[in-house]
Image (cartoon, rainbow, N blue to C red):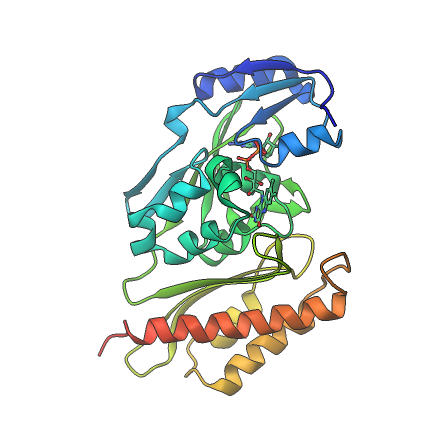
Length: 293
Ligand SMILES: Cc1cc2nc3c(=O)[nH]c(=O)nc-3n(C[C@H](O)[C@H](O)[C@H](O)COP(=O)(O)OP(=O)(O)OC[C@H]3O[C@@H](n4cnc5c(N)ncnc54)[C@H](O)[C@@H]3O)c2cc1C
């Protein structure tokens, strides 16, 4: 199907894009990689009268380490994240998540900003930004603001971003050197959205007790969730199989997935428990190799 007719505007800078948004209000949509928006327009689920193309704004495409954090411009493509040696070294779970998105074609065009604003309940980055306590930098007519990842996702396909705001940067605080992370995803077929996924970042002290821990999950409900109860359960404790089983049980019991083509609610709860247990075990193995002696 073809999309409904629309006007196409090319923004050369963030300031341009904000001015266009101000001018066209709710009639306008930003176009990043187009990997979610264009299919929605073709299905006529989205019918923006004006498309503001931001993909030529070079200032929004970067990956850099600065002030104890990895900073990613919102227009950074999935493939750049997957292949970045900086990300692979400092935040491997982020590269792992990017590499599990769809297929090469989508990863070549799709952007981290677009994926986060799209806020698909089964998307891959949500769990990661929550595990890492990332912050979203936004710019609008009223100025700049920072939204913590924990406040960003408000409902399925909805975020705390105002319609006249642009997500410009994602700031991921660098995990401690002793810390290790992992992102695991259960999908029906390779490249599909997640049935359940878990991002686990943790460190161990010299005695083998869990020091710092951050956990985000997808598949527990209509938004990705920070698994605060599981983090509290693990923090300060000596890790054991029984504790990991308890963590899986806890997330399983609190999850409220909906039944859809990817499975029943009961199946998805079990899948989430299983994927979280696996992710914790794998993160533990990686963290064990880095723990202080
Ligand atoms: C076949 C297929 C399979 C996929 N599988 C997965 C998957 O397994 N996991 C996964 O996570 N994703 C998956 N996706 C989605 C993919 O990650 C998209 O790249 C992403 O959802 C949207 O990014 P985009 O840059 O293409 O944004 P667009 O489609 O251009 O925009 C998406 C939305 O975000 C808004 N927007 C974009 N950028 C900004 C910004 N900087 N500030 C404010 N608003 C903005 C747009 O206005 C629009 O509403 C899949 C997509 C396809 C087509």
